[in-house]
Length: 113
Length: 117
Image (tube, each protein chain N blue to C red):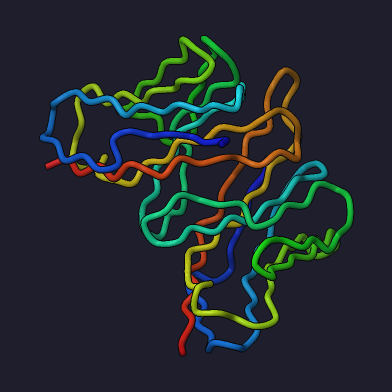
Protein backbone atom coordinates (compact mmCIF):
# COMPACT_ATOMS: atom_id res chain seq x y z
CA UNK A 1 0.00 0.00 0.00
CA UNK A 2 1.29 3.42 -0.99
CA UNK A 3 1.78 5.49 2.11
CA UNK A 4 3.63 8.21 3.95
CA UNK A 5 4.42 7.35 7.54
CA UNK A 6 5.16 9.91 10.20
CA UNK A 7 6.28 9.29 13.75
CA UNK A 8 5.38 10.09 16.39
CA UNK A 9 1.70 10.99 16.01
CA UNK A 10 1.67 12.97 19.22
CA UNK A 11 4.53 14.59 21.08
CA UNK A 12 4.74 16.86 24.11
CA UNK A 13 8.15 18.31 24.83
CA UNK A 14 9.79 21.12 26.75
CA UNK A 15 11.32 24.28 25.37
CA UNK A 16 14.85 23.77 24.11
CA UNK A 17 14.89 19.97 23.99
CA UNK A 18 15.91 18.81 20.54
CA UNK A 19 13.49 16.55 18.73
CA UNK A 20 13.11 14.80 15.40
CA UNK A 21 9.93 13.86 13.59
CA UNK A 22 10.49 11.10 11.10
CA UNK A 23 8.85 10.75 7.70
CA UNK A 24 9.13 7.83 5.33
CA UNK A 25 7.45 7.10 1.98
CA UNK A 26 7.32 3.85 0.01
CA UNK A 27 6.45 5.24 -3.44
CA UNK A 28 9.97 6.11 -4.62
CA UNK A 29 8.95 9.76 -4.87
CA UNK A 30 11.65 12.32 -5.41
CA UNK A 31 9.69 15.26 -4.02
CA UNK A 32 9.00 15.46 -0.29
CA UNK A 33 7.93 18.32 1.91
CA UNK A 34 6.97 19.36 5.42
CA UNK A 35 4.02 21.56 6.36
CA UNK A 36 2.67 22.98 9.53
CA UNK A 37 -1.04 23.54 10.00
CA UNK A 38 -2.36 26.22 12.31
CA UNK A 39 -5.97 27.36 12.79
CA UNK A 40 -6.99 29.93 10.20
CA UNK A 41 -3.69 29.73 8.36
CA UNK A 42 -4.09 26.52 6.39
CA UNK A 43 -0.96 24.57 5.55
CA UNK A 44 2.32 26.42 5.28
CA UNK A 45 5.36 24.81 3.79
CA UNK A 46 8.41 24.57 6.04
CA UNK A 47 10.98 22.84 3.83
CA UNK A 48 10.92 20.76 0.71
CA UNK A 49 13.28 18.42 -1.08
CA UNK A 50 13.33 17.67 -4.78
CA UNK A 51 15.77 14.78 -4.45
CA UNK A 52 18.41 13.19 -2.26
CA UNK A 53 20.76 15.82 -0.80
CA UNK A 54 18.64 18.62 -2.30
CA UNK A 55 16.60 20.65 0.17
CA UNK A 56 15.20 24.16 0.13
CA UNK A 57 13.31 26.53 2.38
CA UNK A 58 9.59 26.91 2.17
CA UNK A 59 7.51 29.75 3.57
CA UNK A 60 8.24 29.26 7.29
CA UNK A 61 11.66 27.59 7.73
CA UNK A 62 12.87 29.44 10.83
CA UNK A 63 13.60 27.12 13.72
CA UNK A 64 13.57 23.95 11.63
CA UNK A 65 16.11 21.77 9.88
CA UNK A 66 15.73 18.88 7.48
CA UNK A 67 17.95 16.32 5.82
CA UNK A 68 17.51 14.02 2.83
CA UNK A 69 20.18 11.36 2.90
CA UNK A 70 17.96 8.70 1.36
CA UNK A 71 15.11 8.96 -1.07
CA UNK A 72 12.49 7.46 1.22
CA UNK A 73 13.22 9.46 4.41
CA UNK A 74 12.85 13.15 5.16
CA UNK A 75 13.13 13.89 8.89
CA UNK A 76 12.18 17.23 10.41
CA UNK A 77 14.48 18.45 13.16
CA UNK A 78 13.74 21.06 15.79
CA UNK A 79 17.08 21.87 17.39
CA UNK A 80 15.64 24.08 20.14
CA UNK A 81 11.85 23.95 20.10
CA UNK A 82 9.86 26.91 21.32
CA UNK A 83 6.16 27.24 22.23
CA UNK A 84 5.38 28.99 18.92
CA UNK A 85 6.26 25.74 17.18
CA UNK A 86 3.30 24.04 18.81
CA UNK A 87 1.37 22.90 15.76
CA UNK A 88 0.15 20.03 13.63
CA UNK A 89 2.83 18.88 11.20
CA UNK A 90 2.37 16.99 7.95
CA UNK A 91 4.87 15.31 5.72
CA UNK A 92 4.00 14.81 2.05
CA UNK A 93 5.53 13.21 -1.00
CA UNK A 94 4.70 13.54 -4.68
CA UNK A 95 5.71 12.04 -7.98
CA UNK A 96 7.04 14.05 -10.93
CA UNK A 97 4.92 16.12 -13.28
CA UNK A 98 2.43 18.91 -12.95
CA UNK A 99 -0.65 16.82 -12.41
CA UNK A 100 0.45 14.46 -9.69
CA UNK A 101 -1.15 14.76 -6.30
CA UNK A 102 0.62 14.80 -2.98
CA UNK A 103 0.31 11.96 -0.52
CA UNK A 104 0.19 13.02 3.11
CA UNK A 105 1.16 11.40 6.34
CA UNK A 106 -1.31 11.20 9.21
CA UNK A 107 0.20 14.19 10.96
CA UNK A 108 2.20 14.82 14.11
CA UNK A 109 0.65 16.96 16.80
CA UNK A 110 3.48 18.70 18.63
CA UNK A 111 3.09 20.62 21.87
CA UNK A 112 6.04 22.60 23.23
CA UNK A 113 5.64 23.73 26.83
CA UNK B 1 3.85 33.54 -8.88
CA UNK B 2 0.86 31.57 -7.71
CA UNK B 3 -1.70 32.05 -4.98
CA UNK B 4 -5.04 30.64 -3.94
CA UNK B 5 -7.93 32.19 -2.02
CA UNK B 6 -10.68 30.21 -0.40
CA UNK B 7 -13.46 32.71 -0.09
CA UNK B 8 -15.20 31.24 2.94
CA UNK B 9 -13.57 30.05 6.15
CA UNK B 10 -16.79 28.25 7.18
CA UNK B 11 -19.75 26.94 5.20
CA UNK B 12 -22.81 25.57 6.95
CA UNK B 13 -25.43 23.46 5.14
CA UNK B 14 -28.24 21.12 6.02
CA UNK B 15 -28.00 17.46 5.17
CA UNK B 16 -29.41 16.82 1.70
CA UNK B 17 -28.83 20.37 0.41
CA UNK B 18 -26.18 21.41 -2.13
CA UNK B 19 -22.62 22.25 -1.17
CA UNK B 20 -20.55 25.04 -2.72
CA UNK B 21 -17.00 25.73 -1.56
CA UNK B 22 -15.39 28.59 -3.42
CA UNK B 23 -11.78 28.87 -4.57
CA UNK B 24 -10.07 31.51 -6.68
CA UNK B 25 -6.51 31.20 -7.87
CA UNK B 26 -3.78 33.29 -9.38
CA UNK B 27 -1.21 31.75 -11.70
CA UNK B 28 1.26 32.96 -14.28
CA UNK B 29 0.87 29.81 -16.34
CA UNK B 30 -1.63 27.04 -16.85
CA UNK B 31 -1.97 25.68 -13.36
CA UNK B 32 -2.83 22.32 -11.93
CA UNK B 33 -5.55 22.59 -9.30
CA UNK B 34 -6.52 20.21 -6.53
CA UNK B 35 -9.06 19.85 -3.77
CA UNK B 36 -8.13 17.93 -0.63
CA UNK B 37 -10.32 16.94 2.30
CA UNK B 38 -9.19 16.57 5.90
CA UNK B 39 -11.45 14.78 8.35
CA UNK B 40 -10.90 15.40 12.06
CA UNK B 41 -7.63 13.95 13.33
CA UNK B 42 -6.76 12.64 9.89
CA UNK B 43 -4.31 13.47 7.15
CA UNK B 44 -5.28 15.06 3.85
CA UNK B 45 -6.93 13.02 1.13
CA UNK B 46 -7.22 13.98 -2.53
CA UNK B 47 -10.80 14.67 -3.66
CA UNK B 48 -10.12 15.63 -7.26
CA UNK B 49 -7.66 17.39 -9.55
CA UNK B 50 -7.60 19.46 -12.73
CA UNK B 51 -4.63 19.16 -15.08
CA UNK B 52 -5.72 20.90 -18.33
CA UNK B 53 -7.98 18.15 -19.62
CA UNK B 54 -11.76 18.40 -19.12
CA UNK B 55 -12.79 21.55 -17.26
CA UNK B 56 -15.44 19.72 -15.24
CA UNK B 57 -13.70 17.32 -12.93
CA UNK B 58 -15.41 14.55 -10.99
CA UNK B 59 -13.95 13.34 -7.74
CA UNK B 60 -14.67 10.91 -4.99
CA UNK B 61 -17.79 10.90 -2.80
CA UNK B 62 -19.90 12.75 -5.37
CA UNK B 63 -17.86 15.95 -5.44
CA UNK B 64 -17.19 17.93 -8.61
CA UNK B 65 -15.26 21.05 -9.50
CA UNK B 66 -15.27 23.22 -12.57
CA UNK B 67 -12.20 25.04 -13.84
CA UNK B 68 -13.16 28.47 -15.16
CA UNK B 69 -10.17 30.25 -16.60
CA UNK B 70 -12.02 33.49 -17.31
CA UNK B 71 -13.04 33.71 -13.66
CA UNK B 72 -9.84 32.15 -12.27
CA UNK B 73 -12.03 29.90 -10.17
CA UNK B 74 -12.15 26.25 -9.21
CA UNK B 75 -15.22 25.91 -7.01
CA UNK B 76 -16.09 22.59 -5.38
CA UNK B 77 -19.70 21.38 -5.44
CA UNK B 78 -21.82 18.46 -4.37
CA UNK B 79 -25.55 18.11 -5.10
CA UNK B 80 -26.53 16.72 -1.71
CA UNK B 81 -24.53 16.96 1.50
CA UNK B 82 -24.10 14.02 3.85
CA UNK B 83 -23.18 14.21 7.51
CA UNK B 84 -19.94 12.41 6.65
CA UNK B 85 -18.90 15.36 4.44
CA UNK B 86 -18.25 17.51 7.51
CA UNK B 87 -14.54 18.23 7.29
CA UNK B 88 -11.93 20.81 6.33
CA UNK B 89 -11.40 21.34 2.60
CA UNK B 90 -8.29 22.77 0.96
CA UNK B 91 -7.89 24.17 -2.51
CA UNK B 92 -4.37 23.86 -3.91
CA UNK B 93 -2.68 25.38 -6.96
CA UNK B 94 0.53 24.18 -8.55
CA UNK B 95 2.14 26.33 -11.19
CA UNK B 96 4.81 25.65 -13.79
CA UNK B 97 8.16 25.52 -12.05
CA UNK B 98 11.19 27.67 -12.80
CA UNK B 99 13.91 26.03 -14.95
CA UNK B 100 15.23 23.04 -13.06
CA UNK B 101 12.57 23.42 -10.43
CA UNK B 102 9.66 21.32 -9.31
CA UNK B 103 5.95 21.85 -9.07
CA UNK B 104 5.52 23.29 -5.61
CA UNK B 105 1.93 23.54 -4.42
CA UNK B 106 0.34 26.48 -2.61
CA UNK B 107 -2.50 25.76 -0.21
CA UNK B 108 -5.52 27.85 0.55
CA UNK B 109 -6.36 28.52 4.17
CA UNK B 110 -9.12 25.96 4.20
CA UNK B 111 -12.92 25.95 4.42
CA UNK B 112 -14.62 24.16 7.25
CA UNK B 113 -17.81 22.45 6.05
CA UNK B 114 -20.47 22.01 8.73
CA UNK B 115 -23.41 19.75 7.97
CA UNK B 116 -26.55 20.01 10.09
CA UNK B 117 -29.01 17.12 10.43
